[in-house]
Length: 63
Image (spheres, rainbow, N blue to C red):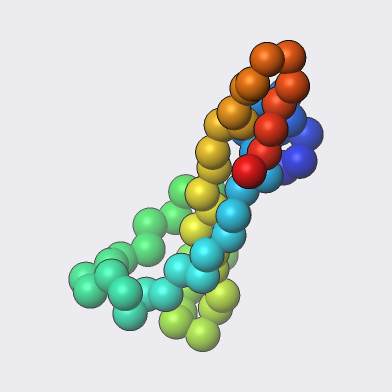
């Protein structure tokens, strides 16, 4: 992930826990057919928040 954010001028993402209980009615949908289809609330998941780097003059700043 580090290389992808650098190439696209993003700061490193901030990760927040994703809790099923915060989203009543949430239903997981597989995004890849990898043979794994079961997900339960004991699994740990995160939400990544990406931000563009801010440019001041000729330097990139990551707050």
